[in-house]
Image (tube, rainbow, N blue to C red; front, top):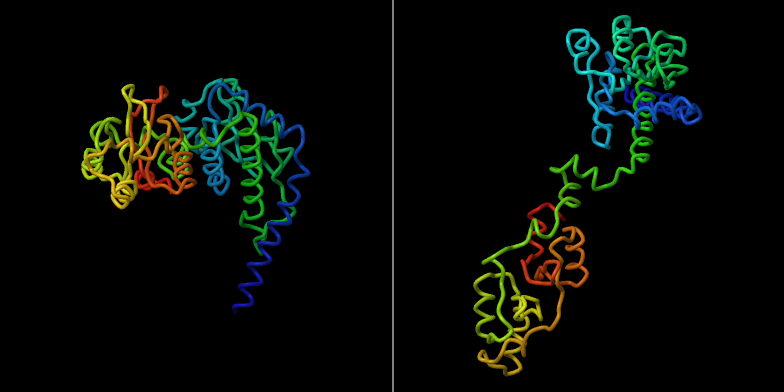
Length: 321
């Protein structure tokens, strides 16, 4: 029994891969025309299909929407019962039907023509009503389905998904869609946390920022260390700029060498040191801390004035790992 299951599974995969391997050679001017139609669309891309084609269509609509093309899925039956009102002449419809002769098309195609809505087709039948009415046809035909009975859509649904992804990626690249653009469509995800957050979104502010004037004593800096618990204190000048930092390590080293708590902090601090820019991307700032093998740093604004402080824990809490 196990051999039968394994052989059937392998045969299914091989058949689907074989059919899909023919897709690259089918890309022609019709694919280019479909992509350019979507790129030049002033409205939305509406994806539609019935049965398994509809399930794939929902995924493709979501892919387009998340990669820079406003898109949504409309079920053909719902379209004929009111949802056609969502579609106007600025929109493009991508209809998926292997046979290209779904009964709903008899009513949908004339309505689209009345509204001057451009129709794109994904079908396995080049002479079907859908194909003949479309401005561009994407060929998803297969020699055979992977289903042993040659009935269940299998190879054809794989072809639909792959060709739809190819179209979405071609449009995305032509739009110059970037990682940051993708993150804006996925703000709650890990990529959104990495690319949308900047240092000023995560840093400590106001009273939570450890700082002393450069005329303060080591004792003053030690008390500030204790108050804020960040592990460092920014030592600032009259203009609010950061002259250096005083850390837990600086305190230990100062006391071991015989320094006094009454000495000026600017004699015990680490001069210069690493500072981060408030407008810097959080992921880049975290890499700076990791590269310098430090856990925290002061944050400065565009004029170089202290405006915050941040440590690795702030990045981890934001999901930037």
